[in-house]
Length: 289
Image (cartoon, rainbow, N blue to C red):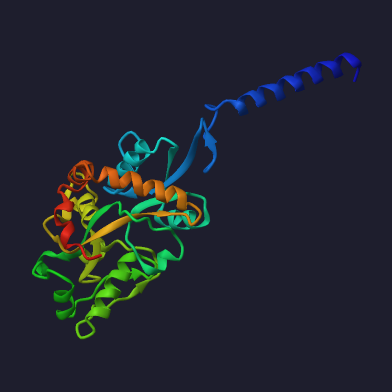
């Protein structure tokens, strides 16, 4: 290779390096990593379960939304020193990712459990409220709560032991040893309880009201054809929480301050009505968990 060609390649190589360096310094050339400073703010990766409508999901345009996500957007707006980046994922990946630091915080209509306090930071302020209940066949709509279900000797759909719904039933059984629900641990995080109940594989299953509405009651829902065959009976309203990575105490404290101020307004009540069809905060004084 002659000298002219060597000089030509050298010039091209230096130019390419210069272009790449310029792109790397451009704040708009890509998203900053979690915890990094971007234009003077700390970037926070917020994981959300993108298949958990109406709590968290993708809308028709592919944008993250749902009660949990919209509350976090309000928090983001209130925290000038932070910028939230939303990452849609699965429920399992969210739990593992937040624990390992892949994500800084995750929202998935999460309930508090003692086991989870070993893996995540729970803030002082809860995120919202969730109606938990039983999905039953129409013929069993007289079963109003866990006590009725247990007394009737009905079979419950299995729940994964790492699912907070399992903990709720286990807590009921501990408090009611003379009338326990037959609780079985499943291998999967969750099963399709609506299908299992409809097929008669079990008599009932634990489900969140929002999820039941999204899967059965809404027009075009996957099980809308079963709206007259299955029912939802609430047995508890439960506080829900964001889950913070163990190294994010400072951020969790900032969240607490922001959400406390937001709760002084009607913003969360309005979001509850928008996504759940009712103001769950009306029963907050009776919530025990």
